[in-house]
Length: 158
Image (cartoon, rainbow, N blue to C red; front, side, top):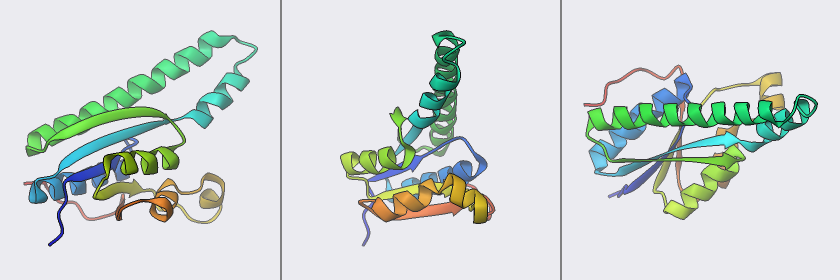
């Protein structure tokens, strides 16, 4: 029998992350596992804004950084609220880094049994330009990864 003790739920607050959250909470409830919700603030974006706003000054970069941190807290509060309603234990974490690298790193640190994450399902040029965090996590993950597309069917955690 498969034993799930720790499920890592990377989340960016998107619709597909919401679908992945529903799966993670359902699995956690069924297996008595805890969920660790992780939001990664992409440091590459922060570095680019620092360069872009160099002439304006550091105030703009700090405002953007503060906005990213507040957004991370909001996203993680939503996950915690949903987990509370479902009766599932949840821990929330926010880090700054490169999303796929930090998801894999945290998965290793936690000895996660499963990573459940959303995927936008991009293809063609947008996939080429933006890449796929989910794809990189699947390739490097220390444990199984369940990817959930936004157009997955809806279900309710009971």
